[in-house]
Amino acid sequence: MRILNFVGARPNFVKVLPILQAIAAYNSEAGKSTDKITEVLVHTGQHYDYQMSEIFFDQLGLKPPDYNLGVGSGPQGWQTAEMLARAERVLLDERPDVAVVYGDTNSTLAGALAAAKLLIPVAHIEAGLRSYNRKMPEEINRILTDRLSTYLFCPTSRAVENLTREGMTTGVHLVGDVMYDALLRNIKIAQIKSRILAKLALKPKSYLLASVHRAENTDNPENLENILTVFRQLEHPLVLPLHPRTRKRIVQLDLMALLENDSNLKIIDPVSYLDMLVLEKNAKKILTDSGGIQKEAYWLKIPCITLRRETEWPETVEAGWNRLVGANKEKIAVSVNELSPEPHTLPQAYGDGHSSETILEILVPRSKEIEH
Ligand code: UD1
Image 1 (cartoon, rainbow, N blue to C red):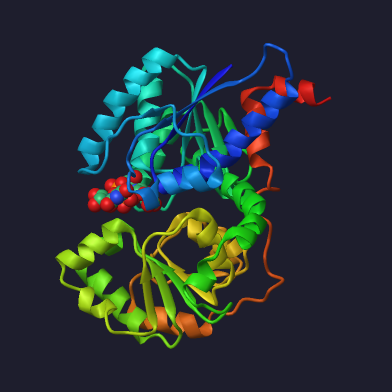
Image 2: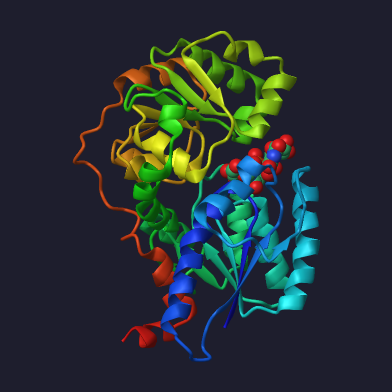
């Protein structure tokens, strides 16, 4: 069995980690038999800064990619098309039995399309998520990737329902969330290894943690200005690891002054996965427009204020741990003061922490036999 994993952007690296670990475990259980899984890791090069890419491989013990397609940044269509062309060449050389794609980035869609055109079955991890906002490039990627996939691995029952509504019922599997697997396996390691709190002189529960990188906020000057203005006005110290996209827009729009000369704001470079987990776990509250961070906040029981008007993770909102506020200054400020969910109201909506093994058992059914 030959499995080819496509990654390219920061959240993809976190999601592939538990799958690679499950493959390694499968292969070690397979012993000397000839039935081992051959795994090929392809990095599209969508993210390329050390802090956005290589640090994840270094720190998480991920093997270096077998291929780096070196695509880099560019307009949506160009970036996706370059990845598609370069991915096709790798797929023709490697001829995997299945191509696995993760989440909703341009790398996800390009990998899925290249494989589907070559009649290679596609497995989509994080299938069925919808924001129902087609202005998001990620929503286009989700819808198309799901259409192209043979295996639709859904993290939540809501995702299964979304697919059912769109007429997709074959190959749909409710498996839980691989990001939950990753968090459970890495939170203790993070707490032992990370020095980020000391480095930033932060005391647990004394600060807010923020992240902003969505096009709807970075590419809308009014939204970006609102968000940065309110960050300045909040009472607590606020830590903001700045995505390169957001930094560039802030400079272009001449908004840097909003972040300067304020001792309450700690603007830092993007951080590694382990440092981010520690920053999240010790934050008083989290403000974000990221999808993954909304879930991590939920699993770590940190109230989350989402700087968007919709979410692909409505379970977190319904449970009272997440509030959607868009880029509205008043709503952001009020929510930072108000949002305080009851600690016991945390339904387990994202699986049992073994999604990656479940996925592998579906892709490679013999793994069950090896176990027994
Ligand atoms: C991408 C994903 C988004 C995901 C995010 C995580 C798409 C459509 N979006 O958004 O879903 O949440 O990754 O970070 O795939 N840049 C650098 N260095 C890098 C990477 C990017 O400077 O290593 C800058 C460039 O100016 C680039 C911009 O960031 O043009 C945007 O990068 P891109 O990969 O297009 O999208 P993200 O905003 O990172």
